[in-house]
Amino acid sequence: MKINHIGVAVANLEEALNFYTNGIGLGVTGRETVDEQKATVAFIPCGEARFELLESTSPDGPIGKFLAKNGGRGGLHHVAIEVDDIEEALASLKARGMKLIDETPRIGAGGSKIAFVHPKTTDGVLIELCQEA
Ligand code: CO
Image (cartoon, rainbow, N blue to C red):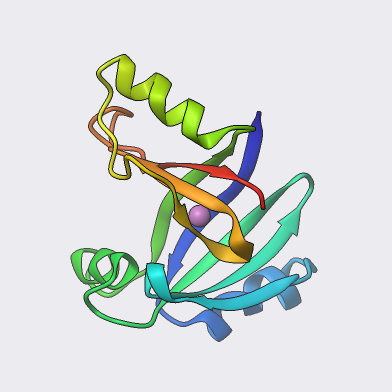
């Protein structure tokens, strides 16, 4: 297992990218709109992990709601742990009585399978489990 990415909610993707690219010299590998997450996503590799910048495409999506709660500002949104078998990881958590947001995986950026663990289980940190496509 490893940290796959760190999800950062941003108010404006172009402005946010300026720091990572021009500011500290990282590159952008992909940009796509993930309808299921109501967000446009850009990935910025940094070592073995990546930053995932998320700009909302709809105020009723998870990033839109996060920004609204945060006074319109972006912020650290989630940390994603890469697992080999996401169904098995979810079953294991469930069997131990841990709370999940997603009991079955959803499709995330790049066709990966993703599922969020409830912050009640993780001391307030939103943890995403992901299995690369
Ligand atoms: Co993510």
